[in-house]
Length: 33
Figure 1 (tube, one colour):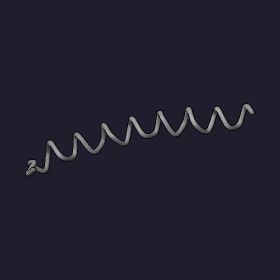
Figure 2: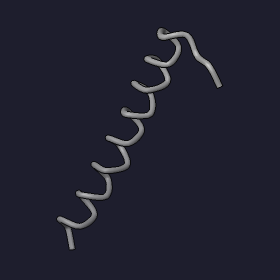
Figure 3: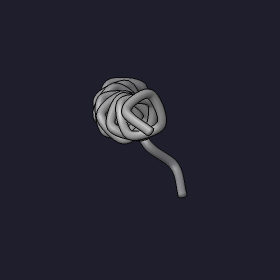
């Protein structure tokens, strides 16, 4: 699929945000145990 540069950047930043939350939760989980 072809995206305009702007929409691709928005999707990328959103996916990074989600990954940061998931990774942050994952790290916290492992630090507690």
